[in-house]
Length: 491
Image 1: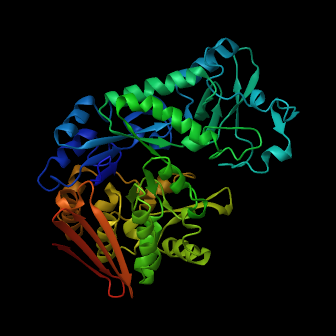
Image 2 (image 1 turned 30 degrees about the horizontal axis):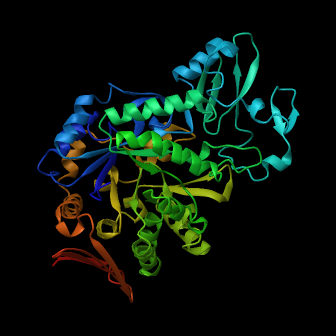
């Protein structure tokens, strides 16, 4: 994986179709700014969560075409795409066949039959599903209230419970939701193999493994990041991906104190730097570089390869900071971003178990252009491959109207505003946008950042210095948090 800046957007984020974004990337204003493009999974056929409930991995022709992907390659831009390992949409051909044929379906075991899974571990209820004994549920991680079950009605009228970690709705004979895949089924592995082959055929270089840590399941386990099952799954996926020369990027949220990022790194994987967004806000707002500098040094000293970011399609991660920031400081960050219009989404009320704040990064910084430019400069000089959320690039503000339109579960829409071509053109005239693009282009073209560069980090009295050196080329960032300014020197 190269370490050049990567744009991150939906295929319809800027202009309405992927072709509009491709055209934009070829324009003088953005030429040579990006080396990669992470296109979110609404590029596939999907029906929920703006792409993360995949029906099938064919290209959604309403938003994109193969020609668009070929044009990206001509621009010298690598491609990153998603593969969701844990679940598939109820609209998938496999689930539709299950509903249509019931016990006769060849996909009967493609999904996880709840009662088969928990056989001998609980008692049958009147509703027809096994209630696992308490000892099996004590450590289990839940993403929604109640047991993760969808009762699927077979053609003979029988209702069969299937495992459903995430969203679900039943409007018989139709269902809406994301059904967990049974990784013990050979058919699932055939599906994994064919899907990776298909994604590779689109020209993908990087494959983000979404929700992979939920896939391995065992009675009595947490059923999120089970060990060693998670690593065994990842190893098998790597074997399938290697013939296609695909780089895997496992996506997993865990606290700093759990050191999962380090385990991934030790196993040779690039991992996400989910600590950076909160650490940068902490540094800027509290006028200190202590925690940020310590994290930068750890990345360098342990040679941890990461993709970093500020904003993204999800919220600003704060659970992840446990162990790297004191709990009171994490809570202060939450309160600050909420005061500035951010929205907190807790895991069914258990704030201390799971939380993030949904906001644009610009709004999280109080809509200060100087702070946004400081944050961007820091991101671009941090060790790793910088991923740039399109709305942050254009200094997007919290979109509360979009949240209202989306309804009860629409908190994420605060940071997913689609921009028209006219809005993009107008935004490109803004100084804060032009300066960000200038910074990104510098990161993409300066030879000090080339593969094999050495990074050093110095910190003293509120001033942070990060220096990149490759052969005779050198680039240095100085950030003065006390006086809210930064300076870049190319030596």
